[in-house]
Image (cartoon, rainbow, N blue to C red; front, side, top):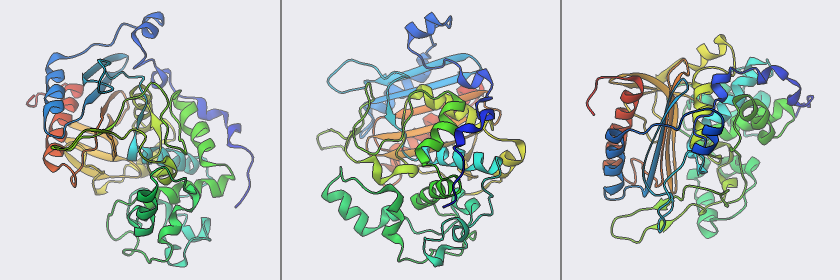
Length: 395
């Protein structure tokens, strides 16, 4: 591993427009004190969220934050915690699941901008300790899920360890050891296949070229320049307060609080980040809007290929470098989705970063567990995108 001076030295990372770090999602009292009006709501959109919470297997709580410039609309339904009347709030913590992959993309592409990494750098060059069979895989292929790396989270040994003790503390930097005896699933670059291993390798590459821990790179390259104050990458299973409680909602079975079910050490750079709707709004506006690096890198990031996020986002999905393109009936937004026990996420923004949507539900919804509910969720998310873009699609 090459050693470098601390990345904190690069003062230009903080040179982000004020609009990126604006006060969207603060509590009404804090917003008022800062001279901002209270966020608006929308009864028509709220009815759609309420209908989702009433569906079989639906989430106990949903919150959506729509932002256009300094204009904020917060729409919510249900409760933040069953047994209480507390509504979801923009400053409640939540697990962002695979939306964390966008953060590892932000770190890697920032290092590409700085010349520390190249999109053509290979695992063999930057991570020579990983299996020789993987050595030709490039950073670009890791970021757009065309690497062919076997998914460590599908490993029987990994799953047995997790099931035996959901709070087990994994060595996050050795997660790829679970599949180190396996060849690539296909020739790198020949096809798309979403894999949690990809973003573990991305984070390890970033550490290798900087000599810094990934958690510090997140703080210096992402949290600080975008003004994220309530975002972190924990190793344990505890949630910071206040938080949106996440639930396993299975029709015919008791609803179970799974907010603190598993240790984040087992997902790390692939899905372990905890954030808030307010911070995720700040993040996606800066990230999708290309505020962290220059136009040449943005152009590379937006070289779209066939591929969908997991779960699929609204409309037609295309994959870029740790970013997805969602072509809806009302226009295009860029972003990422994610799902994990207790939570399903969508973050999206217009390509200029001016308009954004953060859409968070408190149960896991995906094609495997709840295909019908996912179809409805995607339809509602598309309606919200249309409302954001002021489209004329059906509501």
